[in-house]
Length: 445
Image (cartoon, rainbow, N blue to C red; front, side, top):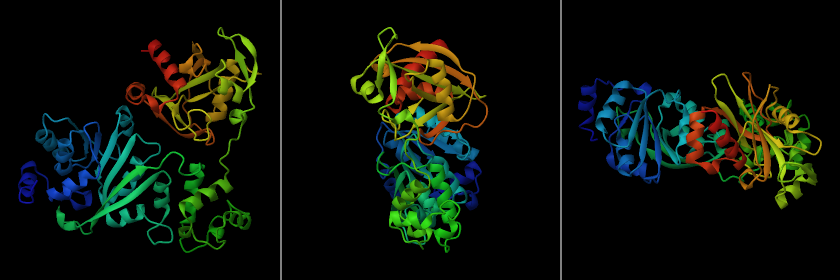
């Protein structure tokens, strides 16, 4: 839309732009085309767009053949977009992007996000839409230039801070281009910038306790001019020993440590190593025959290496909203790391039965006790990793306490979204969960 057209359109729909709400409309069509090109869209992409405004980027995304979900807070602009793009593969959602339920994006095979983020809530939106793990494969954000520089900052610079590390722990950030204020109506007070964000590869960094990482980083940057040895005295009383092992200057300040050094520091303060026999290749499993009758005992390594028939349990935990908690398996797992799985799951060892194992796994993985009901038994096959599986369900309304060694992340999901997600992205899931989910849903529709 040309600059000369925008004022008339805004008058027609009764919108007086409010700069404090981020209502600055892009009028440079060549720049809009360049911005969308950076997302490398294809007809297979599902594009979520935050703050489409008058549709400058939306129009180009649709022309690329992508399906668009546009989230617009202003009701008048949402109505305008519905009329403008009538008949196109687009869904206009009148909603606050901070309130939008991002879980619906898991139901799409391939999601990319475009966002011209309002300056006054940019940080909150970044944290929400960059939650790890994410169904989004690429983010293209237009941000206030100062914030964009912070996201991609390097150590020992004034822009490098807690937000930098919080984002870079899981994502690569590329500062693409400065956008002058003159390409917007009304003209904002500062320049903007375009950043492109993509996930890091799975094993690019060592695993670490993410909660501890966030806590230490926030504390480390709470007083930038103060040395870490003073700020982290409580968490690292043996500071001199730790920094000597890591090769860190004992008098370093927070901004002097690279991301890799921060991860190493977290792992020295809160080691992220297997803390239970569940990862021990010598742990003894009950081996069974094709009728699930005991046929001996073998180590975890032997069982998995030779595809011996053995036993396992899966537990589905539901909240008061009848949503299911799914866990994202730790990268430390020997089988199916970094996939989504049942609320809790594990093998039956040589000294336990199914019921006892289910109770133990729930306690060890989620830190809670709950009444469990056995609802199904699955026969061992390739799709269950050669496990006979007993499936249990239970309800819990309090706070879960996921074991960070076992679980990278976790979240409650509506059942309908899980149904769509398992069809759209089956490789996101551990095969045992898929088998259990299909059986459970067949009996509970």
